[in-house]
Image 1 (cartoon, one colour):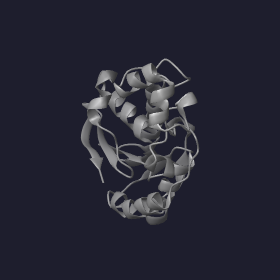
Image 2 (image 1 turned 90 degrees about the horizontal axis):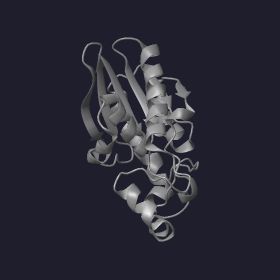
Image 3 (image 1 turned 60 degrees about the horizontal axis):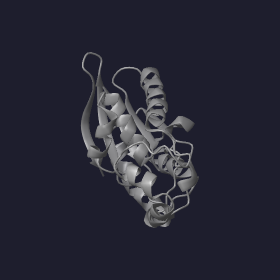
Image 4 (image 1 turned 45 degrees about the horizontal axis):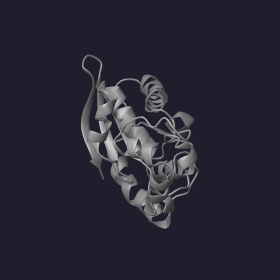
Length: 199
């Protein structure tokens, strides 16, 4: 059985300020660097055989911490990027609430935004699943794959891989910095959720 670990990047200054990042290429903060350094040995202990990452700096830097410990090379894939939040990027939650009250309220409810150039949920899920499935297929049976990615992107990928209705995505809860979702793939049973928000 394949184990797929969706590992969220460490904290950034924008995370700490509740500033919407999306695909804006922000680096890890000092806290985020330490989170990645502390988390990497725990992830390495799971015996990863493949390591892929979003090409955004915060995810790539998190993956690099695991590469240092495990010796695995990192493959980068832009399809593992965070959801694009369009015009919202760079704004705090409070600012977005003021400027786009109706669409930001829809986002808070886990609904499609349909405004401000925010990427559709279905589009995020499809690109994530395509990238992850290619990695799984290439890795072969009994692989342990780590994908260093982003919170919203990981959540939508999880729901899509499990075959759940996308409106259940908010029930998973936010994936914390340097925490992970573990999914197992059985050739007969398909994908199952093993754990969510593991440190």
